Amino acid sequence: MKLTPRQLEIIKIVKENEPISGDSIAKQLGLSRATLRSDLAILTMTGLLDARPKVGYFYTGQTIEPLLYEKLYKVQVEELCIPPLLIHQSVTVYDAVTSLFMYDVGSLYVKDDNDELVGLISRKDLLRSAISNPNTDKTPVAMIMTRMPNIVTITADKTILEAGVLLMQHRIDTLPVIDKEQPKKVIGKITKTKIMEYFINSGNDIDKEKY
Amino acid sequence: MKLTPRQLEIIKIVKENEPISGDSIAKQLGLSRATLRSDLAILTMTGLLDARPKVGYFYTGQTIEPLLYEKLYKVQVEELCIPPLLIHQSVTVYDAVTSLFMYDVGSLYVKDDNDELVGLISRKDLLRSAISNPNTDKTPVAMIMTRMPNIVTITADKTILEAGVLLMQHRIDTLPVIDKEQPKKVIGKITKTKIMEYFINSGNDIDKEKY
View 1 (cartoon, each protein chain N blue to C red):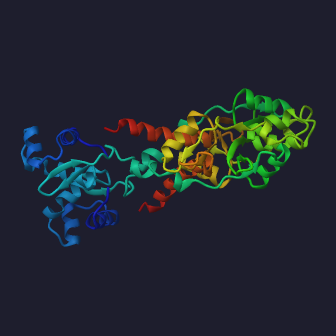
View 2: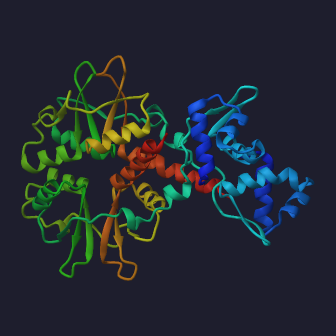
């Protein structure tokens, strides 16, 4: 929903003068009461203004733009995907752990000699290996990773909602974003962290737009 | 914004007969065109209906209820917090790792003899210890945990938006929800996973309500 400049002006007037009668608003705008009738109806119907009989209009404190479902949930994965940390499958578990801390990431993507995605390693995969294996400096990640095709992937044209559903259903933290034509080519990753940040940032932006 | 029964009826009629003129809608409802004027104005202003001159009204496919900011972001932490897995500070790192896998959680909360929160352990804390320490079965978690007061906490009356901002700012996965009067008493936890699931589920619910 998009408000007209006149409706925005009305909200501003009400906010500064509440409670204020419809007649007074019309006067301030240099318009007739009848001209404003439909604007005031819309502003009260949408809950932006509150009208109390014999008192006048109040500003309810609601945001100007109701968060539209389409706008929030239909953002494409493409817009939120970030580069993954790719390591070769011959890297040792010990070195993989080092990379995890060095680059402060939550998961590692594993590639083969052709730069194709062959596996994925989570913090829990590394932890399982580190706690039970004294030779992490001799064990290649290929031995402990989750391997294609057991990895859930997504393409860049899917929505945030679809990505979130996959992360929930499979109880995972990260989804490789793959090329539609070359399913072994990773073009990014979309993570639980990124999705949460997206929703929180969207909420914060609206908080700031509030007036 | 809440639509009236008459507005819902109008949407239904338009959906089934689009394009349809205002006169025809009025006829189907047994009302005068003038009576419907403000309803039609509101439905087109909110973007639920589209009006094309000399053609008629169309249904735009938008959801009936724009996701209101307040509704989505102002839910209290209380409603989404879940029980944490609490272990005693004398438990070994090895046993803590076992619990992490056994109960399939992402973090462990640490208590003392008085059942008060004294620390928090993440997967990365355990991984750091496991990779560099061959004696995880002799090391108590008290030696590796993040300790109070270096733990970010929240109270149950705060909003999801506030919880999300804290998780983002401190780059953490979990927030202990503590009692307002007794700040060492944990009453639950709110996690990145839970917040993401909340937003995704809200989006899915609206998807289903769509008509």
